[in-house]
Length: 484
Image (cartoon, rainbow, N blue to C red; front, side, top):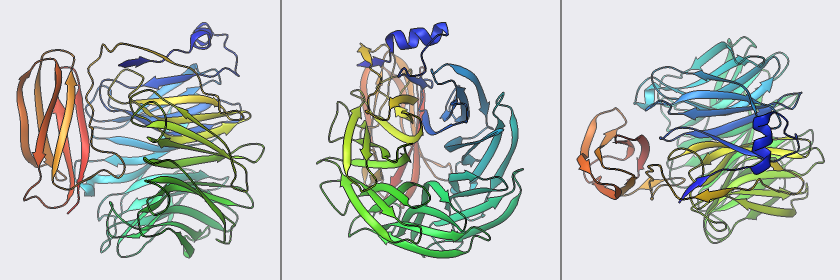
């Protein structure tokens, strides 16, 4: 079914220019391809800055940054990017600028995907400066970004010369010049995920440590680096025999909170929440989830000291994945949980709070215009009340991969399933990470309806692959990971 988001009087009032700032709403952005939203932040006036990457007009994505009023009306929007993909994973406001960070592609090989940060003027969205960092050995990505009065601190993924993946921490000037960079990790797979925390002495980064590869094992990790020069100070791990991954964090003057996914404890994959002091001592840990799969990568501390965790669940709710919002007190006791979404896939990637409200950034294919759209939702953070939505029958084409979810491993065969709303010529190809075509699964005219193709990875080495699906109505490029 096609979902169309309606906000009733709330959206009508916004369109007429007299919406109440305490009204709840949600908006989507994107086209017929895959579009996502990861970052959101709020300025001193209560305006919201929302970062998305959209394949409009496509097939490669650009950064689309929006400034919205508290009632959801758009004040300005700006587009930024080059020929290949730009993907934004974090948004941070430090007036007079708003900063976004993520990955910038120069091609299809891992060596051509670099970490970037860009600054924009909060008054009009004009680009001020950008900086790209590449260690030179493989994939780099920015996930955490904190701006202070005299410097910018960023963290993310990087590939070492002799390691699979490492944590990278950088310090920049306010005009985007590199002051120092440091990397840290085991000889195996390590990650730096989500937002970071900076205090007077240290930079704190959450992630995953010492995993055999991207797909299995490893412990959630909290790492402290010196604020003055980035030198490693200490790290703490948490986990068991399965995959445990710290996907995000937040903190205040007394505590650090880490959230993520665990396959070691509970039923299925569950959300974990950890509380540490600033010396790295674990104060408490807690789990949430059902018999299915849960994960969370973002959280925020409310004005009255509660912790809001935004994640996803397929144990509860209406669809493949629904957005889960959890409220804990600072002792780790769950106050309430709320589930929101349609029968498609709905996920959260970012959260920001101001006053009684929380703003959740994510992605949806229950609502919006395309296969996957960015979504921003205004929620009552006290009660967990979400805006309402209604639906109607579909009229748009939609393709959906029915196999892959986090961490999306492929062992041998993959089935790619898609739907056509009308008769169309379809081309479906598989490429390796260097851009070399490995197979053409389809190149012919197909009738409207559901279709699928099976690709056998027999004889191919493990690694990252892409499939590229092109029809007369939409284009879809998606990453596959082959584990061998």
